[in-house]
Length: 178
Image (cartoon, rainbow, N blue to C red; front, side, top):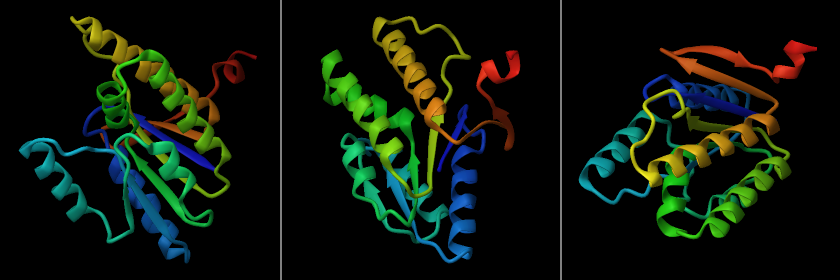
């Protein structure tokens, strides 16, 4: 089962993901946290340290680029929390400058999520609601993340859009329009 948590910055996505992990642990399960941030400056190092302090002491896999491999390697019975696709895709844009390599990485992540039989929570940001990026790279990134989010939402068993710590269920538009 894939649960997809989408929203803006500080909307409550990661907090909810951790709460879902805690619920899983209380039910007797294990949790593996897959972190995608590559802390390349002091600000990011401080943010990573704060996130680590805020979440329980679960096994953490650092996967700034090789996310598909990290997902595939997790124990099938553990709840896996992937936090987050937004940062991961930024890393992919940095480390894999060719569009075909980025597309292959995205395909591999979606395939790994779909192939996984254990419970999975995936966190991502919705960046299409803000200002139009003024650089080509910004527009390409925004468009790539929007397409990735659509693919994960389509594969997810449930998808929620978070705003101010509250969730709105996301449904296939054809279910509403039928």
